[in-house]
Length: 84
Image (tube, rainbow, N blue to C red; front, side, top):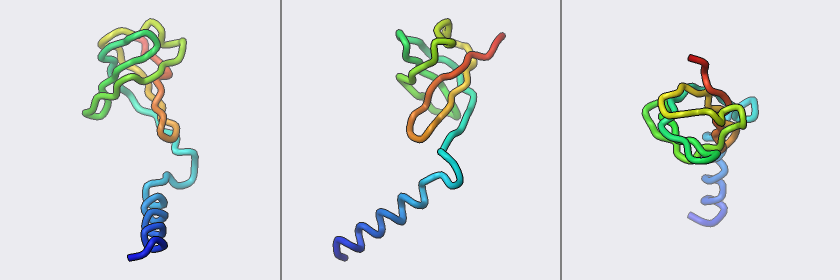
């Protein structure tokens, strides 16, 4: 195996894991576990995401709140708190 083979294999893997037809934008629901300053830790789809930034509209978030998490490319951001 030479350098070109390795490079081609890397290109093929990147193609497999790159979202098709868009920017890689997705949205989902999560539960706030904790808030520290402008960062939030949430529980989402069976995993914990720590240190997510949040919009100013989420500044009143507290543990137990349901929230909206948007993922754009590699970055997840808490963009909304669901009213109770």
